[in-house]
Length: 297
Image 1 (cartoon, rainbow, N blue to C red):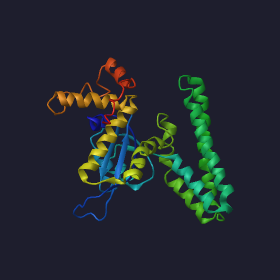
Image 2: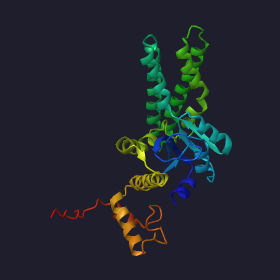
Image 3: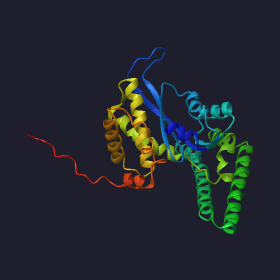
Image 4: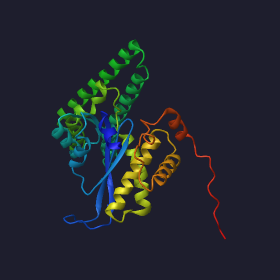
C-alpha cells in the first residue's frame, strides 16, 4: 500500500546508507547491504537491498508516471533518469556547498576563494526563500523570482570566468567542473519552485536508522532486515502525517488479534490517506493511557 501510494505521486527525495546484514548470501562477499529511502509528499518508504545498484530506484519508481527526484550526484540516480526517461533529477545544493567547505578545509590557500562561493550559495537560498514567501502575490513573486534568476545567471558567469582562468588551481577547478557538470540538475528549483534546493529531507529520514545502526549494528538475518525496513517505513510515514506511532500500532495489532492473528482484510482504516477525518484526528492524539504497572513480585 505504501509503495503504490508513493508511485502515484510525482516528487521524491531519495538517499541510501549502509546497513549491515549478518547473513551469508550466495554470490555476495561481506555483510554490507544498503538501506534506501524514498520520501514523497505522503509516504516514507525504505528498501533494504544487498547492493547500491541503480536497479533499486528503478524498481521503486518504474511504475510511476514520472516526476522529479531530489538526490545527490550518485551515478545510480543518473542511470535511473536515463533508463526510465520520465525522471528529472534535482541535485542537492547542500552537497555542492559541502564541496567548497571541504576545499577550504583541505587547502587553506584556497579558503577565501572557496568560502566566497559558500556565501554565493547562501545568497541563493536566501533569494529562493524570499521568493517562496510571496507565492500568493503575483507582483512580489515576479520581482523576487527575477532577482533569483539574475543571481543564478551571475553565478553561471562567475563559474565560467573561474574555469577560463589558467591560473586556477587544480582542486578549485575540480569543484567548479563538478558544478558545471551538474548545473542543469542544480537549477531545477528555479523553474520548479515546489522543489527544495537540497536533499536534507531524505538525509533526516536516515538519522533514525543510522542511530539504530550505531546501537545494534544492523540485522542478524535477511528477514530481520526486511522487517526493519518495513517498520521504518510504517512508523516514519505515520509520523509524517502527525500520527502517534504507538496509537497507530496498538490499533493495528488489536485489529490483527481480532482477526485471528491475520492482517485485517481492509486497510483503509489504517492508511492516513483513506481513514476518516475523525479517525485521523484520533490517531494524532498523544496516547493518554498509562503503561501497565510492572509486576516486581
